[in-house]
Image (tube, rainbow, N blue to C red; front, top):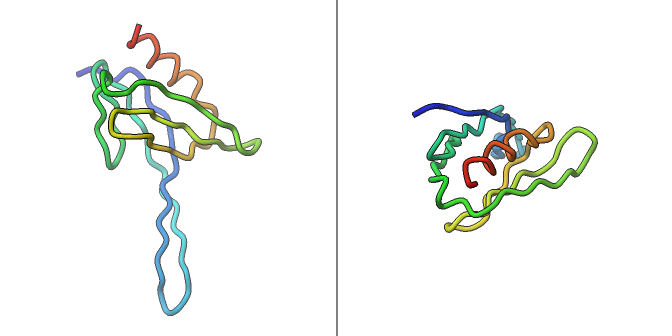
Length: 93
């Protein structure tokens, strides 16, 4: 299985510690392979991903949406995933 491209995303965890809300951010990556997309928590077959879209919400970040047969999954990305989306679209033909 050959990895084609990766793109960073930010995973946020919130917890209560000592009556205070703590927010932790983790840098993760979406990995596009010839037949699947892998994140920290999910594996999507390329055939099960119907589309990808991106919406910029600040000058530095945006949301990448994977439209799948399991629903829409959103990922906060620190930069435009244009190359990731292009490579996905090449695979889909």
